[in-house]
Length: 94
Picture 1: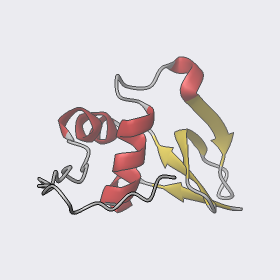
Picture 2: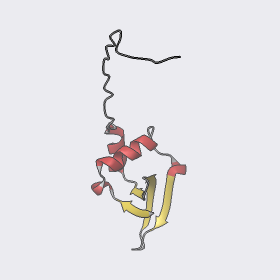
Picture 3: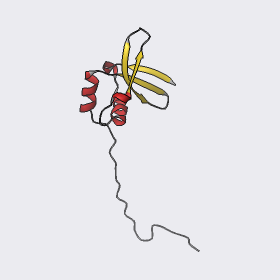
């Protein structure tokens, strides 16, 4: 499984969808992961996962604002009207 550290500036709509879906009311102190990156900088992030990737999204004021103002893109449900006419269904019940 890949681990990718993502900065706010490189956030994709898909990752933002995952964040808002996982943290609809925002994230808390217990959701924050703290670590030192390979460059030796201290980083705070929140984690979201897909089937093959773990994204560690760096926390920033911009991230909080984006999550608050973002609407999750959910495809609309399409309902189809089905008119059944007597005789359309042939049930062979013995």
